[in-house]
Image (cartoon, rainbow, N blue to C red; front, top):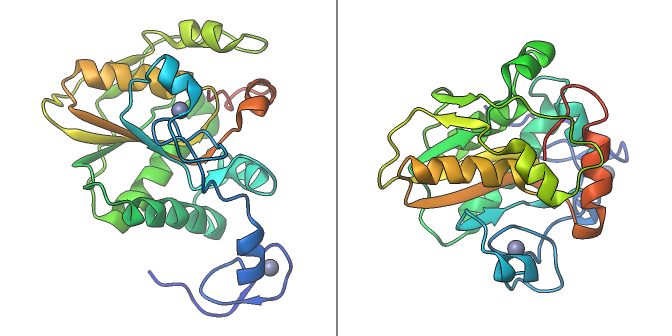
Length: 241
Ligand SMILES: [Zn+2]
Ligand SMILES: [Zn+2]
């Protein structure tokens, strides 16, 4: 599928080429260009952040093309309630392009962060799976959509600090795959505290994975982590951490 060329920029309304965002608006987006290579936390340099130095996370690397900030945050919020639209496509393309530009070899397998079945039923689809499928197609990496259960009943996470949120998602994933010696990428829409992907990364590591990457569309900056997380759990179906 190729972009048709008659676009009007979704931000400024001016004619745009090759996609729904014009070059000027594209340049103004909150690109996450300097970030920690382990957890994708936006920073002043691309060195490993203090958190990852202090307590290395269970993933080997993380990528997020955008900082979770206006106007990307609203687009991603809309993604949760709409199937893959033009907006979602260019956001996913930005993630695929970011990974393609990275020199490391591509993973063998992409695993979207599963949604608890109650949330899946409520919302009708898992946005992480939608992103994974699109990015997998662009990068020609297979996507494994099943065989990971979201077994843990999640406690209400509003007002919990990062450590309490990590406790709340512990044991949430049930990986029914043999991942021995596999190089996998875990995909989600946003990483805030990282509690959810940390938990899945640990389960995937326990299933044998040798190298684990995390790919998200956007990463929440540190100072906003708790506020954004609180907002994202304010309604059922929005509880990603
Ligand atoms: Zn524009
Ligand atoms: Zn880090």
